[in-house]
Length: 482
Image (tube, rainbow, N blue to C red; front, side):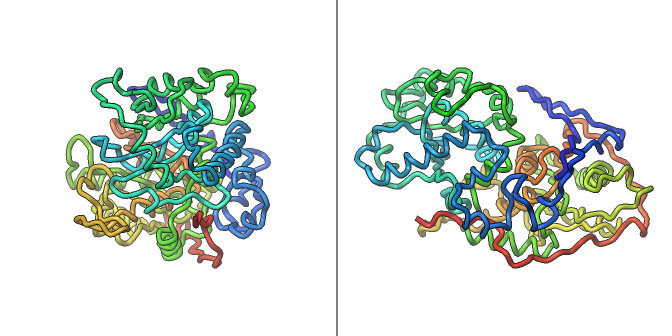
């Protein structure tokens, strides 16, 4: 497993500042006990955290998924045990639902917008820290553009975040929504609506039954998570409940890979489509390829055709210059002549995707992309979907929920890579956090991007990569069925 810090994220509320190491040798400082088995082979010792493809192992174990993680902190694991106990209590004592307190991360018609997929799902560690620090049962609930369960489900032996329909009825009927005229009116007797960090801090020690949260953050709440903001302001009793003995611990970036897999697994139909894409594109086993994400659309102004070509090629150049040498622990691209791993290109623009594939063929490098992305832009959950989506229960709309599947196929193929290069927006960063090595990334700052020269490549340095096939094992943890 590579533990290489390619860049350093320093994030504040205005910008993200990136420091690049221009000496490739500096990038190759890896652990002396380097173990790549987690990423490059199905035969893993399971010592590096949760990995796809080992469903039988996890199912045969008598442990919960989080117990397999050496990364997740003890307070988080203790909270998950409590969460499971409270879910069991609710199933057996529905009439006592009001004896618990809840944290509902939601996107419904009550809000004018909820942001894109990364805005909604990227802050997962941030939400978990608040839920634990406030001793609330964390639940997720979407109605727009479709239920979250249309795309993701809780994995067996993981955390069940679903809002039961009977409990939702209690919330709607007995816990009225505040009038929301201003911050002072975001609360009523039993409910707080949290739209920012201060709302959550104010809710840490109150007794309202329900905190409804619709929060967007430029860094997905990573800075606040790393600073342990909620734990520092939580009551001592809550700190003791989860055995919080220190305000130091693994960072947002470090916990995300395992935490995501404890909470989410794709629905069977999306899991099948991810498997098909990975098989077709030669991306097996997980962790054996490098991914790129280039956001082209939804900027302040439309890009010209020439700019799209330039941005696309520069992303490929930077990936070859920085990530390929790190991936192979090679000093340079030309003198060592390493085998170039498969490079996956993901974008919100079919024009950029077509250009990337053509340019990859021109450079004779193993660059691949999802085939449908070459003639259709994936739908943006917030900006494209402003009409009612036809849901799985048969309500009418202008397009089907399956038209949104590509977004989740893209994020999972990013998240199953070893290293990720990305540019504007939160989607690429989210994929990097999900990946098999979140420290192996390259961020191409959109305002003043680094211009990477075209690398000097020759036929001896290039091949088509290791086009491996699926070994026939289930890739993802199976979801809860009840």
